[in-house]
Length: 426
Ligand code: EPZ
Image (cartoon, rainbow, N blue to C red):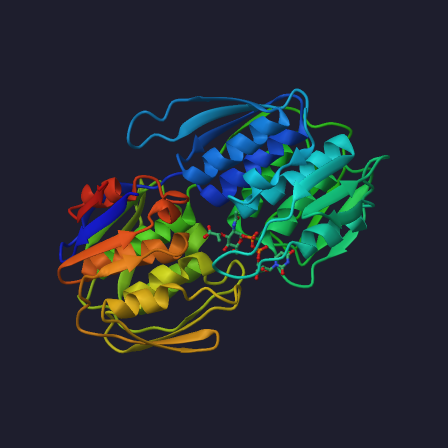
């Protein structure tokens, strides 16, 4: 099983290309199920999660053709063609690999009048139920039963628009409902909808496919269902979480890195916190330049919130940065109940972190020391790589398959900026 070896202490300098966003690409790919015409997605990242969803889509009958992306900085172009949905069941073996598979539920139900999707299980960061997805679809007239570990949804006469009030913000439920409502009869209103850039990207792609959607990027989204959607060409937005991750990498090494293709407007709250910590993030013609201006970063508090708040998907990386800050930082997680799996691993590298419920008090230390550590989920694993970049000596990150789910060639991108990092295969 591959591992990543990092020897810390190198200052990062240079350029890193930001890939297409995983969390935008996944719902966009699921949207291809809504039409019998071809949906072309440009700037598709090369990731394990993309391959997993591709397998599921192929199982449902989607023909996928991928070209391009041979150069190190080129996103791929992929054509998704769901001429017929040949199977409306998303089986356990495919769904269990990735929770985002539940995003096929809305589109298949809307297009075929029935869908059977394995219930996604819990995962390392929390129990993560899908009740909001199901309640929302019920508001659109779906009959839903849970049987033998499967969600069985039926709408034999088609879905009918309705009002869905989310009790709290859910990215995936908003996406599933937007896709389902696009083909429902009449008007659907989603209240307390998610505003994440990835949700907006899906909304814009659905519009390009002929969907009638208003309020994208606000907490009230209105969708007037149409008879059919058509093909479209859409470019996946740059990955704001990869952007924030490499910004933290530059910062933790006291570096100066330009993130090519990155978009500052998507990460405002993160930029504010980074600035308070003494890191400059300024737009350039090609992306964002990240510079550690004052040497050692200052300890700053951060609390995760739905967009436009500080993203939960950057909490672990930011905490890694705070472990070597001058002063203390309170990092509070409000989205997931168990997203501190990186804390004991960072502690093995010398970090001083005390957990109090949903908050972690991080007291900055002068330096971390390299150690063998274990990745537990995607963002936790990359936080260990960041810590390794700043640590004295060698860090070996085990179980890097978590990392490959969401980061494209992370070791190559960091090595190109001077990091001493490699993938080892023993
Ligand atoms: C998306 O997950 C992202 N995944 C996650 O990224 C991200 O952490 C999360 O949004 C929050 O920003 C993808 O886009 C594929 P939610 P999602 O529904 O849609 C609870 C990463 O590292 N909830 O917004 O599953 C849920 O348990 C990942 O790339 C319910 O209780 O997140 C959580 O506590 C991990 N019932 C909260 O809501 C539901 O029906 C927010 O979850 C749905 C969600």
